[in-house]
Image 1 (cartoon, rainbow, N blue to C red):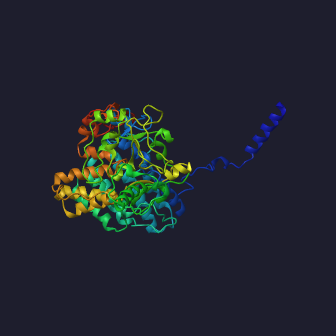
Image 2 (cartoon, one colour):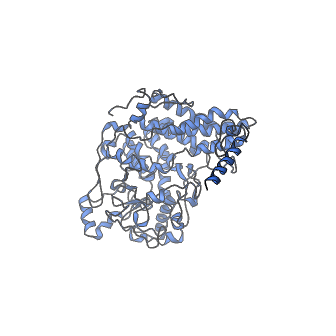
Image 3 (tube, rainbow, N blue to C red):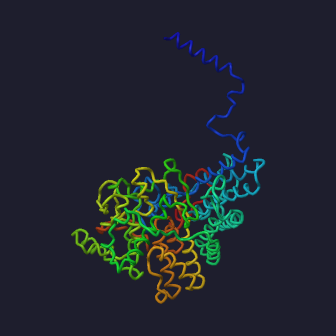
Length: 549
């Protein structure tokens, strides 16, 4: 045996030493090098497509978990648990990162190397990448304020890069979005390299509108939103029929319908709102930008994070009572007066039928967004009615679960949820326009019409012009409409900060039994997140910390 082993080793050595001198200089077959890449138009195509996966994905649900909309119960999944509780230290990283920006910069530095590329296609590829970079800088600036603005790739030893003033970063983002909007097409015909789902002019303008809105630049926000609206390619998604499983949900127990027409309005409002996020309807007319997913290759995890443990979910992010309270009356369109926490708990503990009254005749978006005790959902499971099992594994701490963003058809197939994750949609643009216009000049017909379009799609009554007839009154209506329509889509975190209402709304979370699900405190330093101490150490003290940390 020993002789055989020796002979084998000698043979292998002979094969290795007989190879040509350049054998070990060949690049690995599973890797790319600068010497072999940046040669063809196909290389550019692959490089751009690779950058698309740097777009944010379903992690935005944790931004809601860091707000008053939701409770993120697992601190190992995200920083939302710490941020929402107020126990933020410099040890956490709430989104400080440059991998995506570096990849964008690297592409922009090398794209011109490729020869024989159509100039228009090359310019468009660069515009797509510049959008991804601007989006990344906007998200980071919003959380940290001053950040290093890098438009070139750094060498490995370049760590002493100071923070760029926020105003300069903002100017860069706006300028980039303005310039790429002039290059990007309104839509794509399909087929490589013009696949539907690529970044469009509408996406650049819609993100620009969001940037200006967050900055309180009302005229610029309204103008950018108007530009998106004037493109004429987007609309609110609507269904005109229900599936057999959806028809099995008995909402007559929860809503006092006046007639069949009223019932149809309610049910189609509910279905239209929830279905726009499902795989079956991805890329619908409301979607301006979504994070593309490949079936059974690049799944999102929303069907796992959001449902209760009773149907295989983790209840990672769950609705708060305050979010539930924000859904108005289906009958009047006005806010509801919920019972006191003590009364709710008493009814629930005693299994009193009065407990259900809180959930009667509410905005259809409540039923499409939240699982509450007794709520039906046959599409997820035959005869399913949500039951809160307090203290059980992977169950909610608040008494509610989210059903919004969960895809029941994919759940039934017992495969991963591969629905594209919607990042920007037309309803947000309408809300941006309404808020900006109202802040500029107060109520006008265009503001009411923008809000009414959203409410009509959801099956809700129009805004009462007589009641909401002043800027301040309409402001509250717009803010609540934004909260309800965009729940769990990552907007609430910044909304409560830019409106400066975080000190009032970031309070302890109570569950339906009126016991504390999470203790929360607010400190004004939380308007900005801390620069991770590890990054300050790496920069040898060049990076400075935000106030209060």
